[in-house]
Length: 249
Image 1 (tube, rainbow, N blue to C red):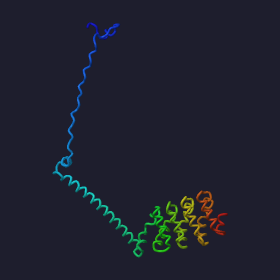
Image 2 (image 1 turned 60 degrees about the horizontal axis):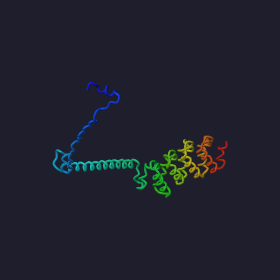
Image 3 (image 1 turned 45 degrees about the horizontal axis):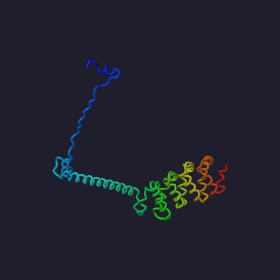
Image 4 (image 1 turned 90 degrees about the vertical axis):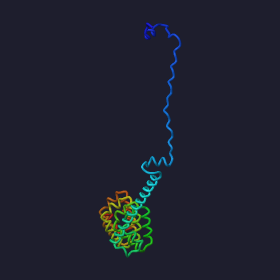
């Protein structure tokens, strides 16, 4: 015992006398498991609604939920009535009471409908009928938005159908409205197709000269554009001299 453990460890050939005592095991302690609570209907109701009697809380919650749903349905109904009232006021303002019901439904809606595939196809089918108040409504609203509609993804197809269905006077008015934007329409990847369709329907020399007057100053620019060049080629193949003389000047 006079030696320190460090000094004994330094002596050559020394070993600890006797076997090494085993380490006593540590007793395993586990937390006491809680008993599973009872999830009965009465217990759950009391836990959620402690201030109410059994079943009253659930009934009240269900009633509140039903009332909430009824309130939502009531709000939807109010919105529907407001929208219906706005539509009726708009119809009175436009004075379309003398039109048939199918034509009244199209008033003020043609431009928006032409921007969707289903709406554009529906309007084209109406134009194929060739007569009726609905056709007049469609052509009138296409005429008002002709330049923008010719460059729309689905509206350009409606414009092509409108050029076929409209009268000579209506085509002349359309030419007047699109003339200031003729270059932009011709260079647009969708507008070029609608404009070429219009060129194909211009049979009178008066109509052809009206279009050539609008496009005369932009022939060189259109000839260099990948979309506009097709318009120039369509003019040369559809019109004849002296209408096309300005292209070669």
